[in-house]
Length: 239
Image 1 (cartoon, rainbow, N blue to C red):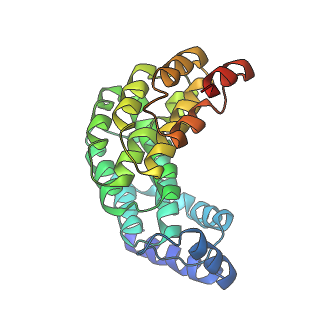
Image 2: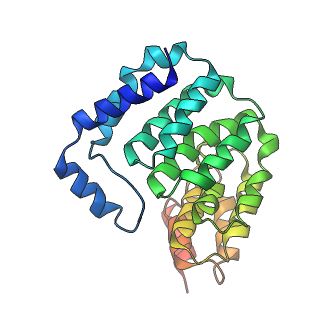
């Protein structure tokens, strides 16, 4: 079955399940994103539609799945990007070294909101990095990008590894590189990352953030200390 056929089928299903109430709600929620297109399909239904084509996707080669994801991302529809995230993650066992550049390009070219950034990076990039940790250094380059979503991606791509207590050194390095950034989307991204890591490495995260209290933006700092024990949080909050 051809990629274009499945793409058309997915789009038809999305049109059929769209409703104006959901569309209006999503448009208000993402009002700051100028070019984002929305069908108006609830997230649970988007997942349902993605799942409906599971057997067809399973019969595709990895490259065909990647081609389908490319077209879905390229459309700039919120719901199509959500399905692309699901399908990109589904071929995780087949990830190859060369896929990194494709994933990087997708973030830089197509991702323009925090919801898709976090979903794609948490799952696809996070799993890729656990399989190929030699690419961790590439995230440092993302922190220098002019694209706010590339910079947020540098942090949120490490959320899943952080939940496992992995890559502590690299997480602190990424956070240090992002501390000077004034963008709240970036600050919330690495703040969330530090908060996640604190559940496995509490004392190390505490020491890291307190040592940078004077230079870390308040938004990032508040996120980072959120999961600390009560006693440590009291100390962290002291003026």
